[in-house]
Length: 191
Image (tube, one colour):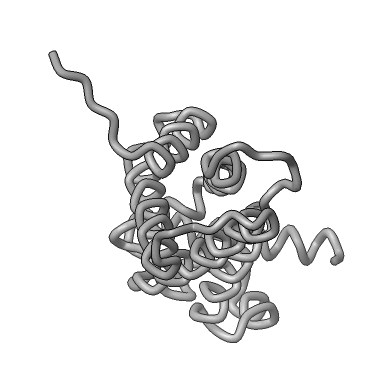
C-alpha cells in the first residue's frame, strides 16, 4: 500500500477513535472525522463508503489481528495451564498493543456487537486449545461446549475490565492468574 494512502487511512482511523472518546462512536459523524483528520469529505469517501464501513474495517482488522496472535505452541505440556497460558498471554499482549482501539470498541460508548464478535473469536481459540489433548489421547471430561463458553466468557470479561481500568496489570501476570484459575480453580487460605 502506498505510504500516503496508509497515512491518510491511519489519520481517518485516529480521528474516529479520538472523536469516539468524546462523543461515543454512535454519535460521531463523518464531518467530525474529516474535521479531526484535516481532510475533505471526498478523501474520506474515496477510502470508505460511510462511517459504518470504516468502523467495520477497524473491527475486522482488530479481530483478525487478535486471531493471528492467538496460537497454541507446539511444545510439550504437563497441564491444561501449559496449553491455555500462551493464547491467553498472546490475546492480552495484542489488546495492550492496540489499547486505543480496544478502549473505544469495548467501552460503553463502543459498538455493542464488537464484544460478541470478540467472544466468538476467543471461543475459536479456546476450542483449538483442546486439540493437543486429543492428539495425546487425553480426554477432557467436562462438556466441551460449556467449557469453551465458560473460558471464553471469563476471558472476555477480564479483558473488558482490564481495558476499562487502564490496563493496570502486566499481561504476563494477568495471564498467569487466569491460567491458574482455569486449571486449579479458586484457591483459598483460612486465616
